[in-house]
Amino acid sequence: MPTRPRVWVSRPTFDDVIARLEPHFEVTAEPKETKFGPTELAAKLADCDAAIVGLKERVGTAELAGAKRLRIVANLGVGYDNLDLAALGAAGIAASNTADVLNESVADYAWALLLGASRRMGAAERWLRAGEWRATEFKGWLGTDVRGRTLGILGMGRIGQAIARRAQGFGMPVLYHNRSRLPEAVERDCRARLVDKGTLLRESDCLMLVLPLTPATRHAIGAAELAHMKPTAVLVNVARGGIVDDAALAAALREGRLAAAGLDVFEGEPRVHPDLLALDNVLLSPHIASATTDTRRAMTAVAVDNVLACFGHGPHAGPPPNLLNPEALAAAGVIFPIHPKLT
Ligand code: 8YV
Image (cartoon, rainbow, N blue to C red; front, side):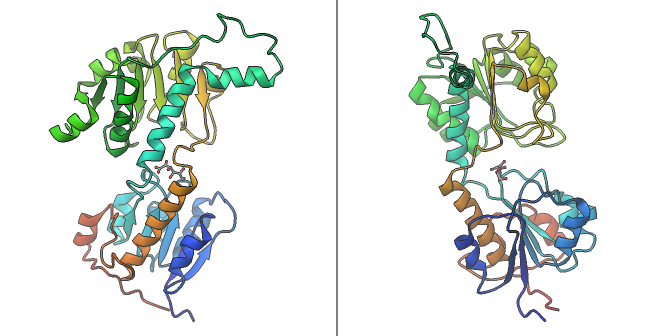
């Protein structure tokens, strides 16, 4: 009979970071990356007091049906469109994310995609590896400079702001569109100006998407929005697949209505729309914007801290520091730290 609450970790992470749970919990960490179907996931969640999950785990009403002892789902990501917060809240289960620790790595990567797409790095490398390089033509492989061009940012949270700060080094004026205006001091720090979405689409030479995926932002960039963009513009998506209509984007890129794109996320990933795969003016990567050793370790540590806090351990004992659903838990009468029912 276990004497300590159980934590399930859905994917391999960093063992030494996860080991911080061991004095307080029975820890089961999956030894390899696995795609759990809803039934398997429900069985895993039914058998633990805390779960550390990745974006592949879609947690909703059905998956929570048998999760009678589960008290927290700690997501390994800042985005949490894989979690049904309403279902978790109704069940009195805390949800947390890994906000902030990945801002700088994701901002760096967004710039890498922008520069790589603007300078045709993916296609040039494929050409070289294919043994096509006989001579470098003076007028071959011409790309576009980003210096001095207008950077647009759709979704100006903390990652958007980190992207904006980097624009100064490239001498780029920054426009942004967001649900709400940033405080003046932040706008000044980011040298960014709020505009409506239409202006952002029309005036951006480089457009970065950094907004969360919600029902309201699905296909925020579709055929109609692409039609407003400059044919010379470059689009970068490091946010979520589904924010862009990938079929419409592929058509715009193919027909020269958009110059290039850098994409780290895709609708229905890991599947990538075949029309995108067929194009040379799009730089593609497999959802790795936060994938540096330091950042993935930090994300793991944040998830661990949230679990520890929830059960009254560690420096943050009490409400998990990255709690996503405090109102719903208060309404459900949940009080932190949690005292698990050990069976
Ligand atoms: C993923 C991300 O978490 O944080 C997010 O929202 O999309 C990424 O950092 C990462 O790919 C692990 O699944």
